[in-house]
Image 1 (tube, rainbow over the protein chains, first blue to last red):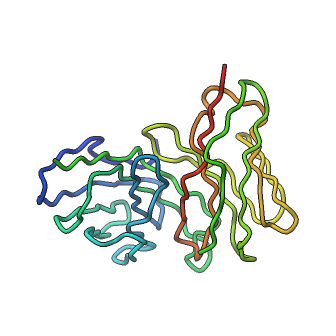
Image 2 (tube, one colour):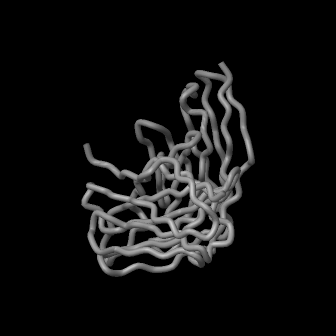
Image 3 (cartoon, rainbow over the protein chains, first blue to last red):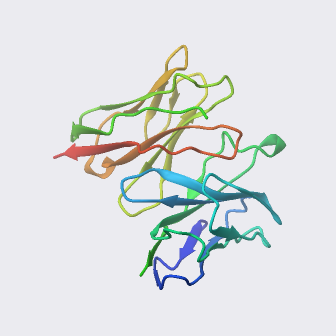
Length: 118
Length: 109
């Protein structure tokens, strides 16, 4: 089955520790995205990548880092610099259209990782 | 950034049609209108999208105003499984979706 997997589903960390969230897709999508969701709120874009070895900051990139060494994988590291890391993290992917734009392409979301920092 | 405005919540009775409105008065000519929905503790899922013309698929219909400043997602017969938060999104430069708080739809049996 094709899809996006995120692991783990729940993650607990102590304050001050870096933590890496996994995101893998086997849909052969070029573009991948990381979002953060706080309770009762919409999703906010952290980072996105249109192609391997390239990524761009989203609206709330401070305190996060990403890598895109493989097309299938887009891990997100929540660093100790992120002041309020407890949240629901969602990864998504999509095809890119002509010229590399994805404006008309569906984003497929993973099941999410709920991170709690104690 | 082009923004959308949706009601915070709506209620519907099961098996009745539901019309979810979205205002986007600052939409630009190349912005697509997307609708996603999110069930509790899950990732959002695509519902439908359109540019200028009304669109239908197996999940829903999208009615877009002639001036494109508003749109309506139509669920023809609401089921309990349709209870979710529905997001109306305008695509900007092709990569960044801006998710507002959405409309929380409750479906009453």
